[in-house]
Image (cartoon, rainbow, N blue to C red; front, top):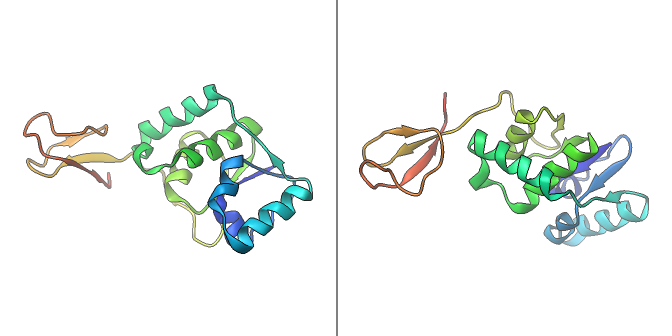
Length: 152
């Protein structure tokens, strides 16, 4: 089973087996990609709605990797669908791939090379330079904003 992100429809991914997606992916598509979605749904692709418990689990994993702020609600729900269906996640989105790796989901990238390693992002104060493990609105020491920083 393959769970398809919008990039699968945009880049004409050919799933080698049964496929599924979520309703919100259709809303992200335009032109030929939306026609591909409709054709695949008509040919038997299932449209899955993940439950709230699984969605919360994905959000927690995304918070743990530092990707929560860069994932859309659609991204979170696509990952949740892959988790519930025990499926291969099909996406070119690096943040989605990172969270999927944290959840031990298999990922198939489409047009881009997939991630080579999982990253647990750090957040660095733009004023005093202190680093934090989780995203905060402001630095508790100097009050400056924080930016996501590559942990390597």
